[in-house]
Image (cartoon, rainbow, N blue to C red; front, side):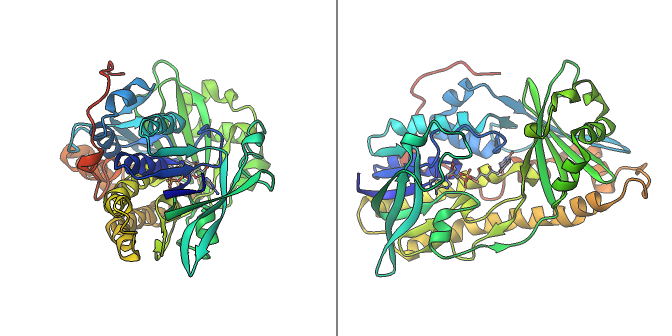
Length: 434
Ligand SMILES: Cc1cc2nc3c(=O)[nH]c(=O)nc-3n(C[C@H](O)[C@H](O)[C@H](O)COP(=O)(O)OP(=O)(O)OC[C@H]3O[C@@H](n4cnc5c(N)ncnc54)[C@H](O)[C@@H]3O)c2cc1C
Protein backbone atom coordinates (compact mmCIF):
# COMPACT_ATOMS: atom_id res chain seq x y z
CA UNK A 1 0.00 0.00 0.00
CA UNK A 2 1.40 3.41 -0.93
CA UNK A 3 -1.61 5.69 -0.72
CA UNK A 4 -4.64 6.19 1.53
CA UNK A 5 -7.08 9.02 2.34
CA UNK A 6 -6.17 9.40 6.00
CA UNK A 7 -3.13 7.98 7.81
CA UNK A 8 -3.43 7.81 11.59
CA UNK A 9 -0.13 7.44 13.45
CA UNK A 10 -0.50 5.46 16.70
CA UNK A 11 -3.04 2.85 17.73
CA UNK A 12 -3.79 4.17 21.22
CA UNK A 13 -7.27 5.26 22.35
CA UNK A 14 -7.24 8.39 20.12
CA UNK A 15 -5.94 6.61 17.01
CA UNK A 16 -8.18 3.55 17.25
CA UNK A 17 -11.36 5.57 17.84
CA UNK A 18 -10.51 7.93 14.98
CA UNK A 19 -9.73 4.99 12.69
CA UNK A 20 -12.99 3.24 13.56
CA UNK A 21 -15.17 6.31 13.07
CA UNK A 22 -13.59 7.43 9.80
CA UNK A 23 -13.89 3.88 8.45
CA UNK A 24 -17.58 3.89 9.35
CA UNK A 25 -17.90 7.05 7.26
CA UNK A 26 -16.36 5.14 4.33
CA UNK A 27 -13.02 6.99 4.46
CA UNK A 28 -9.97 4.91 3.45
CA UNK A 29 -8.07 5.04 6.72
CA UNK A 30 -4.81 3.35 7.74
CA UNK A 31 -3.66 3.22 11.36
CA UNK A 32 0.09 2.63 11.81
CA UNK A 33 1.03 1.22 15.23
CA UNK A 34 4.67 0.65 16.06
CA UNK A 35 4.05 -2.28 18.40
CA UNK A 36 3.02 -5.79 17.43
CA UNK A 37 0.22 -5.81 20.01
CA UNK A 38 -1.50 -3.57 22.54
CA UNK A 39 0.03 -5.38 25.52
CA UNK A 40 1.54 -2.69 27.69
CA UNK A 41 0.91 -2.65 31.42
CA UNK A 42 0.11 0.41 33.55
CA UNK A 43 -0.86 2.44 30.53
CA UNK A 44 -4.12 3.73 31.89
CA UNK A 45 -7.04 1.40 32.27
CA UNK A 46 -9.98 3.63 33.10
CA UNK A 47 -12.94 3.95 30.73
CA UNK A 48 -15.14 6.74 31.99
CA UNK A 49 -18.90 7.21 31.85
CA UNK A 50 -18.87 9.40 28.73
CA UNK A 51 -16.71 6.89 26.82
CA UNK A 52 -19.02 4.04 27.94
CA UNK A 53 -21.95 5.99 26.52
CA UNK A 54 -20.02 6.49 23.27
CA UNK A 55 -19.45 2.72 23.04
CA UNK A 56 -23.22 2.22 23.44
CA UNK A 57 -23.87 4.71 20.63
CA UNK A 58 -21.39 2.83 18.43
CA UNK A 59 -23.24 -0.43 19.18
CA UNK A 60 -20.21 -1.79 21.07
CA UNK A 61 -21.68 -1.75 24.60
CA UNK A 62 -22.53 -5.46 24.68
CA UNK A 63 -19.08 -6.43 23.36
CA UNK A 64 -17.47 -4.21 26.00
CA UNK A 65 -19.59 -5.90 28.68
CA UNK A 66 -18.08 -9.24 27.60
CA UNK A 67 -14.53 -8.08 28.46
CA UNK A 68 -13.62 -8.87 32.06
CA UNK A 69 -13.85 -5.51 33.77
CA UNK A 70 -14.70 -3.90 37.06
CA UNK A 71 -17.28 -1.16 37.52
CA UNK A 72 -16.38 1.36 40.18
CA UNK A 73 -19.09 3.69 41.49
CA UNK A 74 -17.42 5.06 44.62
CA UNK A 75 -14.17 6.83 45.37
CA UNK A 76 -13.05 6.78 49.01
CA UNK A 77 -10.63 9.39 50.33
CA UNK A 78 -8.86 8.15 53.46
CA UNK A 79 -7.10 10.84 55.46
CA UNK A 80 -5.39 10.83 58.83
CA UNK A 81 -8.48 12.47 60.35
CA UNK A 82 -11.05 10.11 58.82
CA UNK A 83 -12.49 9.12 55.46
CA UNK A 84 -15.15 10.26 53.00
CA UNK A 85 -16.72 8.24 50.20
CA UNK A 86 -17.88 10.00 47.03
CA UNK A 87 -20.55 8.22 45.01
CA UNK A 88 -21.01 8.61 41.25
CA UNK A 89 -24.76 7.86 41.40
CA UNK A 90 -25.71 11.49 40.71
CA UNK A 91 -23.83 11.98 37.44
CA UNK A 92 -26.17 12.29 34.44
CA UNK A 93 -26.59 9.46 31.89
CA UNK A 94 -27.00 5.71 32.03
CA UNK A 95 -23.47 4.91 33.23
CA UNK A 96 -22.99 6.05 36.80
CA UNK A 97 -19.60 4.43 37.16
CA UNK A 98 -16.08 4.18 35.76
CA UNK A 99 -15.01 0.89 34.19
CA UNK A 100 -11.56 -0.47 34.92
CA UNK A 101 -10.49 -2.61 32.01
CA UNK A 102 -7.05 -3.58 30.69
CA UNK A 103 -6.29 -1.03 27.98
CA UNK A 104 -5.17 -3.76 25.56
CA UNK A 105 -8.63 -5.37 25.74
CA UNK A 106 -10.30 -2.02 25.10
CA UNK A 107 -8.02 -1.34 22.11
CA UNK A 108 -8.52 -4.88 20.72
CA UNK A 109 -12.27 -4.33 20.91
CA UNK A 110 -11.94 -1.14 18.86
CA UNK A 111 -9.55 -2.84 16.40
CA UNK A 112 -11.97 -5.76 15.94
CA UNK A 113 -14.91 -3.42 15.35
CA UNK A 114 -12.88 -1.34 12.88
CA UNK A 115 -11.71 -4.45 11.01
CA UNK A 116 -15.36 -5.08 10.06
CA UNK A 117 -15.25 -1.92 7.92
CA UNK A 118 -13.83 -2.53 4.43
CA UNK A 119 -12.05 0.83 4.27
CA UNK A 120 -10.07 0.25 7.50
CA UNK A 121 -6.48 -1.02 7.70
CA UNK A 122 -4.38 -1.48 10.83
CA UNK A 123 -0.67 -2.06 10.23
CA UNK A 124 1.07 -3.30 13.35
CA UNK A 125 4.87 -3.22 13.71
CA UNK A 126 4.76 -0.06 11.60
CA UNK A 127 6.87 2.65 13.20
CA UNK A 128 6.54 6.11 11.70
CA UNK A 129 9.94 7.75 11.39
CA UNK A 130 9.19 10.94 9.48
CA UNK A 131 6.76 13.02 7.43
CA UNK A 132 6.51 13.40 3.66
CA UNK A 133 6.13 17.04 2.66
CA UNK A 134 5.56 18.82 -0.63
CA UNK A 135 5.54 22.62 -0.99
CA UNK A 136 5.17 23.01 2.80
CA UNK A 137 2.21 20.62 3.00
CA UNK A 138 2.33 17.26 4.83
CA UNK A 139 1.39 14.56 2.30
CA UNK A 140 1.96 11.38 4.30
CA UNK A 141 4.52 9.51 6.37
CA UNK A 142 7.65 7.44 6.16
CA UNK A 143 7.51 4.27 8.25
CA UNK A 144 9.56 1.22 9.09
CA UNK A 145 8.00 -2.23 8.95
CA UNK A 146 9.39 -4.10 11.94
CA UNK A 147 7.38 -7.30 11.53
CA UNK A 148 10.49 -9.47 11.39
CA UNK A 149 11.56 -8.09 14.82
CA UNK A 150 8.20 -8.58 16.53
CA UNK A 151 9.52 -11.52 18.58
CA UNK A 152 12.10 -9.29 20.27
CA UNK A 153 11.71 -8.01 23.85
CA UNK A 154 9.33 -5.08 24.42
CA UNK A 155 12.12 -2.51 24.92
CA UNK A 156 13.63 -3.36 21.50
CA UNK A 157 10.33 -3.63 19.64
CA UNK A 158 9.18 -0.69 17.60
CA UNK A 159 12.45 1.20 17.80
CA UNK A 160 15.95 0.95 16.41
CA UNK A 161 17.23 1.24 12.93
CA UNK A 162 16.30 -2.14 11.45
CA UNK A 163 13.25 -2.98 9.32
CA UNK A 164 12.19 -2.14 5.80
CA UNK A 165 11.38 1.48 4.95
CA UNK A 166 8.11 2.48 3.28
CA UNK A 167 6.20 5.60 2.35
CA UNK A 168 2.47 6.09 2.70
CA UNK A 169 0.89 9.12 1.07
CA UNK A 170 -2.37 10.54 2.41
CA UNK A 171 -4.65 13.56 2.07
CA UNK A 172 -4.49 13.91 5.85
CA UNK A 173 -1.99 12.71 8.48
CA UNK A 174 -3.16 12.60 12.10
CA UNK A 175 -0.58 12.27 14.88
CA UNK A 176 -2.08 10.16 17.69
CA UNK A 177 1.31 8.88 18.80
CA UNK A 178 1.19 10.02 22.38
CA UNK A 179 3.12 12.23 24.74
CA UNK A 180 6.51 11.72 23.02
CA UNK A 181 5.05 12.11 19.53
CA UNK A 182 7.42 11.38 16.65
CA UNK A 183 5.05 13.13 14.25
CA UNK A 184 5.18 16.31 16.32
CA UNK A 185 8.99 16.20 16.43
CA UNK A 186 9.17 15.53 12.68
CA UNK A 187 6.97 18.59 12.09
CA UNK A 188 9.52 20.60 14.08
CA UNK A 189 7.08 21.73 16.75
CA UNK A 190 7.07 21.30 20.52
CA UNK A 191 4.41 21.74 23.19
CA UNK A 192 4.35 24.33 25.92
CA UNK A 193 5.18 22.49 29.15
CA UNK A 194 3.69 23.37 32.52
CA UNK A 195 5.78 21.23 34.86
CA UNK A 196 4.44 18.90 37.51
CA UNK A 197 5.55 18.36 41.12
CA UNK A 198 4.91 14.61 41.09
CA UNK A 199 5.88 11.30 39.52
CA UNK A 200 4.01 8.05 40.05
CA UNK A 201 5.27 4.56 40.89
CA UNK A 202 2.81 1.91 39.73
CA UNK A 203 2.63 -1.61 41.14
CA UNK A 204 0.08 -4.33 41.85
CA UNK A 205 -1.08 -5.88 45.09
CA UNK A 206 -3.45 -8.84 45.42
CA UNK A 207 -6.98 -8.04 46.54
CA UNK A 208 -8.34 -10.05 49.47
CA UNK A 209 -11.79 -10.68 50.95
CA UNK A 210 -12.74 -7.91 53.34
CA UNK A 211 -10.78 -5.19 51.46
CA UNK A 212 -12.66 -1.95 50.75
CA UNK A 213 -14.71 -1.88 47.51
CA UNK A 214 -14.12 0.84 44.87
CA UNK A 215 -11.16 3.14 44.38
CA UNK A 216 -9.31 4.36 47.44
CA UNK A 217 -7.12 7.45 47.84
CA UNK A 218 -4.96 7.59 50.99
CA UNK A 219 -3.60 11.03 51.91
CA UNK A 220 -1.17 11.66 54.76
CA UNK A 221 1.54 14.18 55.51
CA UNK A 222 4.29 13.63 52.93
CA UNK A 223 2.47 10.75 51.24
CA UNK A 224 -0.27 9.94 48.77
CA UNK A 225 -1.41 6.58 47.46
CA UNK A 226 -4.28 5.89 45.05
CA UNK A 227 -5.53 2.31 44.77
CA UNK A 228 -7.63 1.26 41.78
CA UNK A 229 -9.96 -1.65 42.47
CA UNK A 230 -9.28 -4.16 39.65
CA UNK A 231 -11.42 -6.96 41.08
CA UNK A 232 -8.79 -9.58 41.91
CA UNK A 233 -5.97 -7.09 42.45
CA UNK A 234 -5.24 -3.48 43.36
CA UNK A 235 -3.45 -1.27 40.86
CA UNK A 236 -1.53 1.02 43.17
CA UNK A 237 -0.29 4.52 42.27
CA UNK A 238 2.30 5.52 44.84
CA UNK A 239 2.76 9.24 44.25
CA UNK A 240 6.24 10.67 44.85
CA UNK A 241 7.89 14.07 44.51
CA UNK A 242 9.15 14.84 41.01
CA UNK A 243 12.53 13.18 40.55
CA UNK A 244 12.19 11.29 43.86
CA UNK A 245 12.54 7.92 42.15
CA UNK A 246 16.32 7.68 42.63
CA UNK A 247 16.05 8.26 46.42
CA UNK A 248 13.23 5.78 46.70
CA UNK A 249 15.19 3.10 44.84
CA UNK A 250 18.34 3.84 46.86
CA UNK A 251 16.35 3.23 50.06
CA UNK A 252 15.45 -0.25 48.76
CA UNK A 253 12.20 -1.98 48.02
CA UNK A 254 11.85 -2.93 51.71
CA UNK A 255 11.54 0.79 52.55
CA UNK A 256 8.68 1.08 50.05
CA UNK A 257 6.93 -1.86 51.72
CA UNK A 258 7.36 -0.25 55.15
CA UNK A 259 5.94 3.07 53.93
CA UNK A 260 2.95 1.32 52.38
CA UNK A 261 2.32 -0.65 55.57
CA UNK A 262 2.31 2.58 57.58
CA UNK A 263 -0.02 4.35 55.17
CA UNK A 264 -2.45 1.55 54.34
CA UNK A 265 -2.07 -0.98 57.18
CA UNK A 266 -4.58 -3.47 55.72
CA UNK A 267 -2.19 -4.12 52.81
CA UNK A 268 0.60 -5.33 55.17
CA UNK A 269 -0.26 -9.02 54.71
CA UNK A 270 0.62 -8.95 50.98
CA UNK A 271 3.38 -6.38 50.57
CA UNK A 272 5.96 -9.15 50.08
CA UNK A 273 4.47 -9.57 46.56
CA UNK A 274 6.48 -6.45 45.62
CA UNK A 275 9.58 -8.59 45.08
CA UNK A 276 11.94 -6.05 43.48
CA UNK A 277 12.01 -2.77 41.59
CA UNK A 278 11.17 -4.75 38.44
CA UNK A 279 7.62 -4.91 39.85
CA UNK A 280 7.44 -1.10 40.09
CA UNK A 281 6.98 1.06 36.95
CA UNK A 282 7.73 4.79 37.03
CA UNK A 283 5.46 7.30 35.28
CA UNK A 284 7.29 10.56 34.57
CA UNK A 285 4.32 12.91 34.98
CA UNK A 286 4.06 15.63 32.32
CA UNK A 287 1.51 18.31 31.60
CA UNK A 288 1.93 20.04 28.24
CA UNK A 289 -0.14 21.42 25.37
CA UNK A 290 0.45 22.46 21.78
CA UNK A 291 -0.43 26.06 20.91
CA UNK A 292 -1.39 24.94 17.40
CA UNK A 293 -2.64 21.42 16.81
CA UNK A 294 -2.48 21.50 12.99
CA UNK A 295 -0.63 22.54 9.88
CA UNK A 296 -1.47 22.03 6.22
CA UNK A 297 -2.22 18.29 5.87
CA UNK A 298 -1.44 17.45 9.52
CA UNK A 299 -3.41 17.29 12.79
CA UNK A 300 -2.34 16.31 16.32
CA UNK A 301 -4.85 14.98 18.87
CA UNK A 302 -4.83 13.14 22.21
CA UNK A 303 -1.63 13.15 24.26
CA UNK A 304 0.33 14.30 21.19
CA UNK A 305 -1.56 17.61 21.45
CA UNK A 306 -1.90 17.73 25.26
CA UNK A 307 -0.21 15.34 27.73
CA UNK A 308 -2.32 15.06 30.87
CA UNK A 309 -1.42 14.54 34.51
CA UNK A 310 -2.80 11.28 35.97
CA UNK A 311 -4.92 13.39 38.38
CA UNK A 312 -8.50 12.25 37.78
CA UNK A 313 -7.35 9.57 35.30
CA UNK A 314 -8.94 11.48 32.42
CA UNK A 315 -6.32 11.12 29.66
CA UNK A 316 -8.07 8.29 27.81
CA UNK A 317 -11.46 9.98 27.98
CA UNK A 318 -10.06 13.18 26.54
CA UNK A 319 -8.11 11.41 23.79
CA UNK A 320 -11.27 9.52 22.77
CA UNK A 321 -13.34 12.73 22.76
CA UNK A 322 -10.73 14.46 20.55
CA UNK A 323 -10.98 11.57 18.09
CA UNK A 324 -14.78 11.73 17.94
CA UNK A 325 -14.75 15.47 17.28
CA UNK A 326 -12.04 15.08 14.63
CA UNK A 327 -13.97 12.32 12.85
CA UNK A 328 -17.21 14.32 12.90
CA UNK A 329 -15.55 17.43 11.43
CA UNK A 330 -13.23 15.72 8.95
CA UNK A 331 -15.12 12.71 7.58
CA UNK A 332 -17.12 14.67 5.00
CA UNK A 333 -14.23 16.64 3.50
CA UNK A 334 -12.12 13.46 3.40
CA UNK A 335 -14.87 11.39 1.78
CA UNK A 336 -15.94 13.99 -0.73
CA UNK A 337 -12.33 14.68 -1.72
CA UNK A 338 -12.73 18.39 -0.98
CA UNK A 339 -9.41 18.11 0.69
CA UNK A 340 -9.09 18.98 4.33
CA UNK A 341 -8.16 22.63 4.61
CA UNK A 342 -6.22 24.10 7.54
CA UNK A 343 -9.42 26.02 8.39
CA UNK A 344 -11.20 22.65 8.91
CA UNK A 345 -8.37 21.40 11.10
CA UNK A 346 -8.55 24.60 13.09
CA UNK A 347 -12.18 23.79 13.88
CA UNK A 348 -11.06 20.54 15.54
CA UNK A 349 -8.59 22.45 17.71
CA UNK A 350 -11.21 25.12 18.53
CA UNK A 351 -13.67 22.45 19.65
CA UNK A 352 -11.27 20.36 21.76
CA UNK A 353 -8.84 22.95 23.08
CA UNK A 354 -11.08 24.27 25.84
CA UNK A 355 -11.81 20.94 27.49
CA UNK A 356 -8.04 20.27 27.52
CA UNK A 357 -7.32 23.74 28.96
CA UNK A 358 -10.00 23.38 31.64
CA UNK A 359 -8.93 19.92 32.76
CA UNK A 360 -5.25 20.80 32.75
CA UNK A 361 -6.02 23.96 34.75
CA UNK A 362 -7.84 21.80 37.33
CA UNK A 363 -4.97 19.31 37.41
CA UNK A 364 -2.39 22.07 37.82
CA UNK A 365 -4.43 23.54 40.67
CA UNK A 366 -4.50 20.15 42.41
CA UNK A 367 -0.72 19.84 41.83
CA UNK A 368 -0.09 23.28 43.30
CA UNK A 369 -2.57 23.43 46.14
CA UNK A 370 -2.71 19.81 47.27
CA UNK A 371 -0.12 17.39 45.91
CA UNK A 372 2.97 19.65 45.89
CA UNK A 373 2.57 20.85 49.51
CA UNK A 374 1.38 17.42 50.65
CA UNK A 375 4.44 15.63 49.31
CA UNK A 376 6.86 18.41 50.30
CA UNK A 377 5.80 18.20 53.95
CA UNK A 378 8.07 16.24 56.26
CA UNK A 379 5.99 13.78 58.32
CA UNK A 380 8.46 14.04 61.20
CA UNK A 381 8.02 17.85 61.43
CA UNK A 382 4.31 18.16 60.98
CA UNK A 383 1.70 16.44 63.12
CA UNK A 384 -0.98 14.44 61.39
CA UNK A 385 -4.19 16.44 60.90
CA UNK A 386 -6.94 15.68 63.37
CA UNK A 387 -9.72 17.29 61.29
CA UNK A 388 -10.83 16.71 57.72
CA UNK A 389 -10.44 19.68 55.33
CA UNK A 390 -13.66 21.75 55.09
CA UNK A 391 -14.31 20.99 51.42
CA UNK A 392 -14.03 17.26 52.11
CA UNK A 393 -16.39 17.53 55.09
CA UNK A 394 -18.93 19.36 52.91
CA UNK A 395 -18.78 16.60 50.31
CA UNK A 396 -19.43 14.05 53.03
CA UNK A 397 -22.31 16.02 54.53
CA UNK A 398 -24.12 17.04 51.30
CA UNK A 399 -24.12 14.12 48.82
CA UNK A 400 -25.65 16.40 46.14
CA UNK A 401 -22.32 18.27 45.99
CA UNK A 402 -20.60 15.01 45.07
CA UNK A 403 -22.10 15.34 41.59
CA UNK A 404 -19.58 18.13 40.81
CA UNK A 405 -16.27 16.21 41.21
CA UNK A 406 -18.07 13.09 39.96
CA UNK A 407 -19.10 14.86 36.73
CA UNK A 408 -15.69 16.44 36.15
CA UNK A 409 -13.89 13.11 36.49
CA UNK A 410 -16.35 10.58 35.06
CA UNK A 411 -17.87 12.67 32.26
CA UNK A 412 -15.62 15.72 31.77
CA UNK A 413 -16.29 19.02 30.02
CA UNK A 414 -17.80 18.84 26.52
CA UNK A 415 -18.30 15.07 26.20
CA UNK A 416 -18.65 14.03 22.55
CA UNK A 417 -21.41 11.91 21.01
CA UNK A 418 -21.01 9.53 18.09
CA UNK A 419 -22.09 11.14 14.79
CA UNK A 420 -25.33 9.63 13.42
CA UNK A 421 -23.48 7.93 10.52
CA UNK A 422 -21.21 6.08 12.95
CA UNK A 423 -24.00 4.70 15.14
CA UNK A 424 -24.90 1.04 14.96
CA UNK A 425 -27.21 -1.31 16.74
CA UNK A 426 -25.31 -4.04 18.59
CA UNK A 427 -24.67 -6.92 16.16
CA UNK A 428 -25.22 -9.60 18.80
CA UNK A 429 -26.94 -9.49 22.19
CA UNK A 430 -24.46 -10.53 24.87
CA UNK A 431 -25.12 -11.10 28.53
CA UNK A 432 -24.12 -8.14 30.69
CA UNK A 433 -20.94 -8.67 32.73
CA UNK A 434 -21.02 -7.90 36.46
C1 LIG B 1 1.66 4.81 33.34
C2 LIG B 1 0.44 5.56 32.84
C3 LIG B 1 -0.75 5.42 33.51
C4 LIG B 1 -1.88 6.12 33.08
N1 LIG B 1 -3.07 5.96 33.73
C5 LIG B 1 -4.19 6.51 33.21
C6 LIG B 1 -5.48 6.20 33.73
O1 LIG B 1 -5.61 5.41 34.68
N2 LIG B 1 -6.57 6.75 33.14
C7 LIG B 1 -6.45 7.60 32.06
O2 LIG B 1 -7.47 8.07 31.56
N3 LIG B 1 -5.25 7.91 31.56
C8 LIG B 1 -4.13 7.36 32.08
N4 LIG B 1 -2.92 7.63 31.52
C9 LIG B 1 -2.87 8.54 30.39
C10 LIG B 1 -3.39 7.83 29.16
O3 LIG B 1 -2.73 6.60 28.98
C11 LIG B 1 -3.21 8.73 27.95
O4 LIG B 1 -3.72 10.03 28.22
C12 LIG B 1 -3.95 8.17 26.75
O5 LIG B 1 -3.56 6.84 26.52
C13 LIG B 1 -3.67 9.02 25.54
O6 LIG B 1 -4.11 8.34 24.40
P1 LIG B 1 -3.43 8.61 22.98
O7 LIG B 1 -4.13 7.70 22.05
O8 LIG B 1 -3.40 10.05 22.72
O9 LIG B 1 -1.90 8.18 23.16
P2 LIG B 1 -1.24 6.81 23.65
O10 LIG B 1 -2.18 6.01 24.47
O11 LIG B 1 0.07 7.17 24.23
O12 LIG B 1 -1.05 5.98 22.31
C14 LIG B 1 -0.04 6.31 21.41
C15 LIG B 1 0.19 5.12 20.50
O13 LIG B 1 1.06 5.48 19.46
C16 LIG B 1 2.02 4.47 19.27
N5 LIG B 1 3.21 5.12 18.72
C17 LIG B 1 4.07 5.95 19.33
N6 LIG B 1 5.01 6.36 18.47
C18 LIG B 1 4.74 5.79 17.29
C19 LIG B 1 5.36 5.82 16.00
N7 LIG B 1 6.47 6.54 15.79
N8 LIG B 1 4.83 5.10 15.00
C20 LIG B 1 3.70 4.36 15.20
N9 LIG B 1 3.07 4.28 16.40
C21 LIG B 1 3.58 4.99 17.42
C22 LIG B 1 2.24 3.90 20.67
O14 LIG B 1 2.77 2.59 20.62
C23 LIG B 1 0.82 3.94 21.22
O15 LIG B 1 0.12 2.76 20.93
C24 LIG B 1 -1.78 6.98 31.95
C25 LIG B 1 -0.56 7.11 31.28
C26 LIG B 1 0.54 6.40 31.70
C27 LIG B 1 1.85 6.55 30.93
